[in-house]
Image (tube, rainbow, N blue to C red; front, side, top):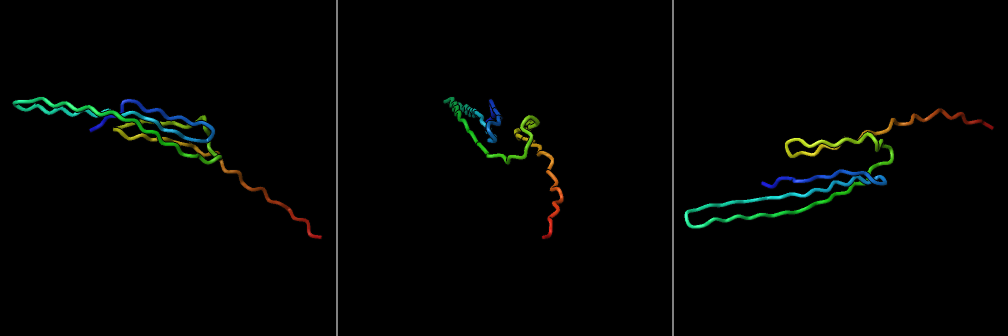
Length: 87
């Protein structure tokens, strides 16, 4: 099973980017041999965010290998009633 060694979450110009590196190590020992395999990799995902969010309040947390990113929305602007003049 691979383990995430490092993870970075950032927002730049309305784009949420998640980058990470993982490392996996397998060891097999038998009577006549010893086999060790190490693999490393990286990943990156970017998502365009809607314009009505509060960037400064974005939070990220990692628990049991699950990344949770909370992106709060701004309060929706209620449309003001518009009086139309009848001619």
